Image (cartoon, rainbow, N blue to C red):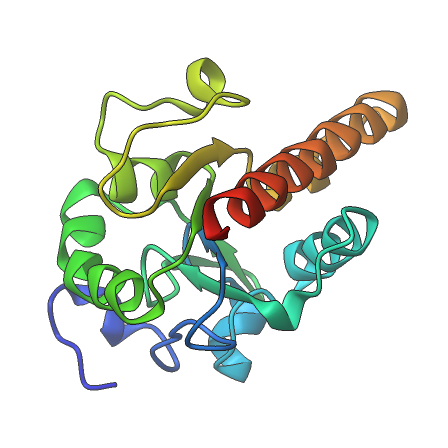
Length: 188
């Protein structure tokens, strides 16, 4: 809670660590806490979290059975009037949080690890893995028997076109289903 590995702690309300069972088969890793997560101290409780909950339900995955966390543990933001707007963490900020993320992966020992978004993909798998290039295919990783990348739920929220948003949601649900099936197979 007293991490000072980078300067993000200065403007954040609190550190936001992962949540759920320690022995979860599936670990979902997002980018960083958002405004609601920073205020409540829990991952994925804001708009992106509600969309993730809906996608998990559609995929037949119990959120409480998955470990949900972020690559960066403090909210990076800039003021815009009364609002706090998300800013993408810099490489040094992602690196500063790597020991915390590594400790979570080691403690949970997931059968499947799903990076949601570019920052999570970079933190877990390095700079060669790209969401646009590697989404939908299994990745080799020493971190878990099953590893994959997908978009971040907030990317779906930013889409303005209804049909595009629905298509991206269906693809996101399909990614969750595929990783869940692969995790169950790896656990047997």
